[in-house]
Image (cartoon, rainbow, N blue to C red; front, side, top):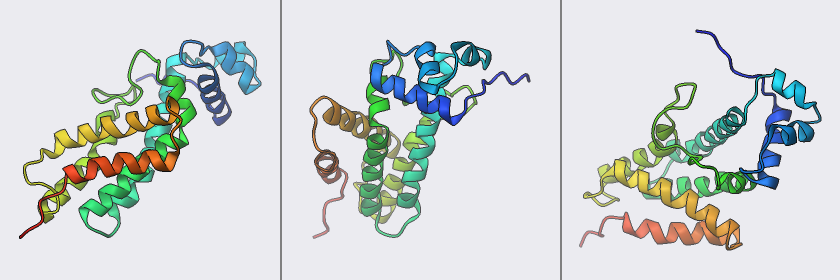
Length: 199
């Protein structure tokens, strides 16, 4: 198989993120990326870069940050609710870290965090984002701390759709404080997952 992936170094990716953050999806052009990276437009074209490839590379970086941030919650000590709460906080932290980029991409025609299908490198993008929540929910159902009637797969998809997108909206459109946004979201969601205390 002929690998036609473009040469995208950190400087070009940082420039792409900067352009998206400053100008949004509709004004995101290779000319602006080249200017921000301090290279000529011809150089960028010769590297074979397209808008879509730049965005995909940035999204892959966000997915890697997501995995790294949620890993301690998956592998650390504590009950499933404690670890899920930590994972939800980590989720908010990742969105905060990429806030300008994700706000700029929010007007893109396709969702940035793909829930179905594969990326061009064959990665199961749904699995990357949803699997950590599903695992923690299954752990909690097993230990009796989460409701036994929960569908862990469906609930994980709900959590993934609710938390990052609502956090992004409240931070960007409503200018809520980061800590207030995360705490309010998590405090609203967690009680609906917990099993009734035994009498």
